[in-house]
Length: 76
Image 1 (cartoon, rainbow, N blue to C red):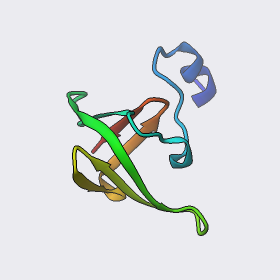
Image 2 (cartoon, rainbow, N blue to C red; image 1 turned 90 degrees about the horizontal axis):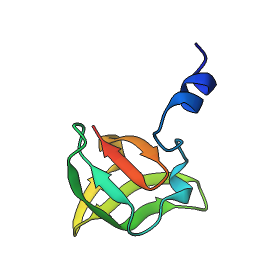
Image 3 (cartoon, rainbow, N blue to C red; image 1 turned 180 degrees about the horizontal axis):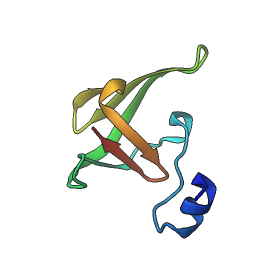
């Protein structure tokens, strides 16, 4: 089954690029438990480099982020 077809059948929001992440998006751990909300996106938009997020005052490096879906960030 194609990725597109699986996405149509899923109730999960679509994956999105880091540039769409906004303050207030929910952040969950790998098991889906809520960690907090995005305070700030750490990135260099001019060079299109995503460094990570600030969540509840803690810096989370980009390499700890597993998926970005509309309204939700899932950590590894």
